[in-house]
Image 1 (cartoon, rainbow, N blue to C red):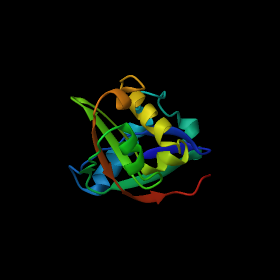
Image 2 (spheres, one colour):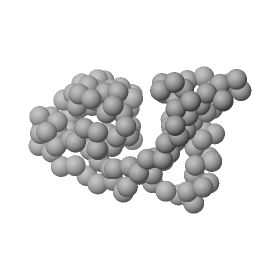
Image 3 (cartoon, helix red, strand yellow):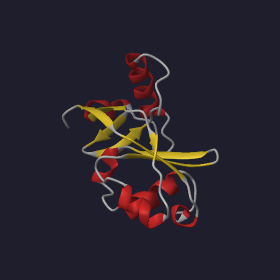
Length: 143
């Protein structure tokens, strides 16, 4: 579930795998995106009319095998692949839509490492577990 105001991210929380019916999942994650995304203060009542809602239904993810950082860059499909980086218990993902804001694969992986709470160059220094997925996107028109 992604919330935006005037095209700017306002909250985004979801799950990588389904654990409940889609309607309940949408409801739960809409509330969480509005109130629990650590990057933002909770959505205020006066902001609600300006919110645009986007729902992304993820395909099952699969491992992306790669040899080294250069090979990883070549194998990623900007604008198509959602990416999950894992290192032990650390994990972070960017939906394919994030490529619109971060189109360069180097920057994309750098920002994803930072989101994971790791150093920005971790993807260059360590062989991380990488998974990719696609999304079916349902988007409300911007207000």
